[in-house]
Length: 342
Image (cartoon, rainbow, N blue to C red; front, side, top):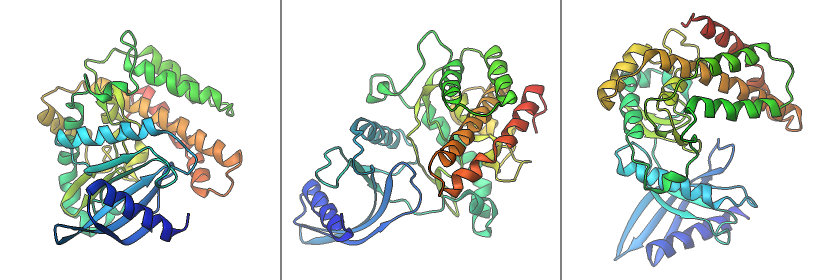
């Protein structure tokens, strides 16, 4: 639909939900990013009781024709419960599965201003203080996520391992199935890594909510540090060490390899901060296991991105560039299995 019509529909929807006699869309812009969904910045002015209030919102819409209302409600409930639990997240307002409003399901939430690009956060002078604060802030946010009560809530519908299967084997099964379905060129290092990780798998000490993609690039920061945790699409129930290991995957360091935790801190600094926030002792050996498993998962994703480029999406240079990073992951896996972590 044309942007003017889109704006009118957004205005009508918010007026219907708030009961306001008038809602004006002051600004509507398509934001970059969002591989799976459109992201729009919306500035509205809501008139109620003789007063006018301006509000900045984010609208995330499924591609027209895609109908996955269950996933949208799941994300809505995740964000709602995370906000109630004290996790820094945007406040969610409405989740709509009826496509008659905007042509597809969508979410409307608070807009949190700030920076999301990791290289800027790790480089720019404006974020010097943020870099000092972020290890502690990220640890506290992750501890709050892992403390969220998922039992007896809509979050029980999230993916989770069977009771008799360790979470690590559940993740390995998922990604090995992806890997085998890609019909890739031979990758002996990946074959070895799957075997090594299966051989060393252990049952988790506890099961919690897991964010699933907790790293720089999926958080909003200001000069003072963390403002909001984003991108909950991969949330599930599993081993909390999965999030800790994923944050330490080499690709999320953006060249700052001497600081394994997102290019921000040494592992021990982050581990200690998490322990203080959560009251739970991290098994260093198992955390490194999950870091290695995270690298393997990322390696499978690089192949998946390359296949997408080669099999038809030949205009997406980002996919091609990610596909070239498979060799970096293979080196990291070899070092990890040998015990030579840096």
